[in-house]
Image 1 (cartoon, rainbow, N blue to C red):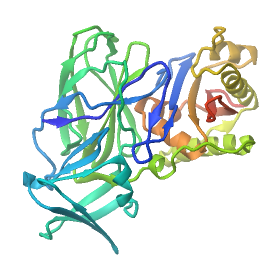
Image 2 (image 1 turned 90 degrees about the horizontal axis):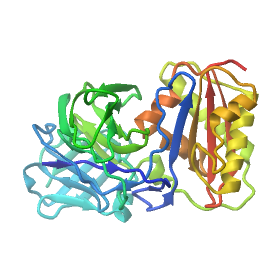
Image 3 (image 1 turned 45 degrees about the vertical axis):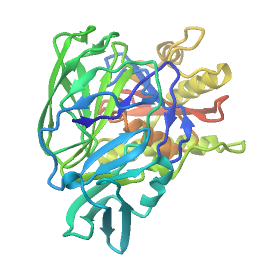
Length: 388
């Protein structure tokens, strides 16, 4: 049996970055008008691996990977061996194994800092090497959360190419039948886990996911309100998580005010556009009115000390857009960080939020930013299908 990493969502979002154990709020998005690709309110706190998957077969190298609050564990082929050596160009990293398993606590993941995404050679105890593709370690490490994810079987951290049949039961609070799946190139698709829009407590879950390319895939399950119950990484084919992600290499830290807020907001928009253009989509242009509504929202969250789409007074993005005279279809995405590149990266690690960022309908966007009481920055992105 394999284990999956569960990402669970309470009302206040936080993130634990595996490599640095930095704690920071994460993200949220919501839309109105025509339903956008995602209307999830937040993707949040990570938790202990709870669901299991049946291992029908493993990639040819035989490495089994577990991601948990204890860090990263790699069980070597056959469950034997005293060391694992990774060679990538002139870089050689040797990791000691105990009882055939390499275990790296979060604080020890810096041993991997010289490795980069791409092909590498791995060997056990100096034996003949095999070629694997190194990918980022999914950066969210678990800690307790009150949220309850669904129980699933059929997915493991590493799987071969092919179609996985996933089964299970809906959690007590229910879940959306629509499952979001993100491919290694950033394409988001939706598969259906059952009859109707919402699966109630105990309802049977059954869906297929086709992994047709090597790399890191993400599978997301949301509660009836659109809040993420589970995001699980699946490393397909000869792909192994041995590279520190941007979130691990650049942990969130406190800062000395004032921040160059205008520049940070511009960098968030630039990051979104780099993502869109890389996927063959049209870049969104800055919309002055959407800039205004996004900044108003950011200031409101910072002043009132909340993080969410509806203010304590009940004001929503819909009312903000209407007051600004904005029409058409629009959506709101929220994320907290100090570093704009990290902020965009966080959003891409949730398939529903990635779908929001890459929705082909968007023609323009506005970005707001304000310092939250927790010393991070509330970034707000307001997307619109209208030109400025």
